[in-house]
Length: 453
Ligand code: SF4
Image (cartoon, rainbow, N blue to C red; front, side, top):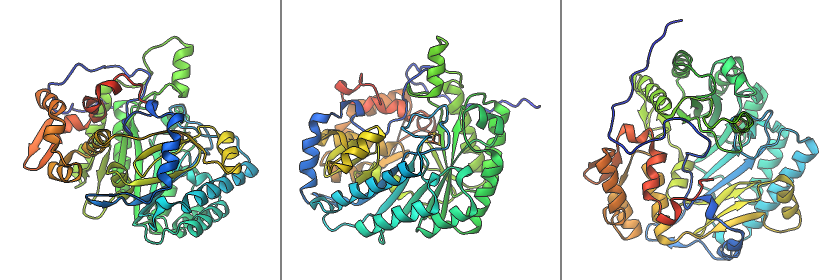
């Protein structure tokens, strides 16, 4: 087998960086960190539901709807989500009933304010674990409660091994516009040692049929740095991804949170370093993938995404999440944001279902970010897209990012990661490849030591 070394991205002078992959979360998904969300703040959330949506200087926030389906065929060794592999048809029916009952409570609250969802997202877990009949039951019920006929995008996450032709047609017929396939890798050995349920043959079959029946948009997910990844295997995986010509590709760098099977094994063996590539190697691999896609005309649109045609291929859910949209999230462990308050549901199946059946909101913790924290959140999340408009933030928050974030922006500039082009504040390619680490510069001092759960 040939041994080719992928060239590193251009070096930038940055802060000292942890080289090895050790246990813990890396990805910044929200702010303030989840560790600061508390049960005692739930009354602030329930009060917020009883008020109509607040108008900001840029208008009333759009509404999005997220539904969590927590079932999977197998638990991947790197998975840190709350998923269930042992639920039977009755459990699933009970869960779908609970989702509809939960949604019915929100749909009757003043917070909806006559809005229809602008975007809808089915995430997991594995939404495609559900049968066509179960999906129809769920979505028909949801549409009756909160019609999504004005949604610009309906995203549905699928695990290739669950996607029969019949099911793919059923998913398309629900009105799904964006199918997101959790491929992660194309090598059967790597898929197996990382605990994935599907194999490459299923990927090719599901992708080909999804294309044939005309999903408007197909995204594929890959992970750089899975257990036993090598230079050659990564290059082969990227070549296979390129050959599919998906509308967009999301590439994550493998992290090993504490609640993963990989960490459990590390603990049992007394190891501090995870058996996956170090951070520098993972960044180099993602940069290589970006380069291969750029060669055929794709555009890098975030620290994790390349897109075939940015003028055509949008990701309305992500853009809404990153710009302060109201996100009504239902399902076990799901988190959302309504009328200025963050909330998260119960982590476990039975407490979630029991709360809904007892006509209680199944919310486990909440947090009301201050105006400053909302500014930090939006600015950080949008910086993950590579650059932001200073004028847009000034208009929305009444203060220029250059004043609000003078210190962290100076730090990024001194480290060589900052770019500045007219109105746009951005970060370099090297910065984008490690953006989640850099974002901690923007955290308030009291949040810097918080565990990022
Ligand atoms: S398919 Fe996704 S959600 Fe399910 S176990 Fe694997 S990583 Fe977790």
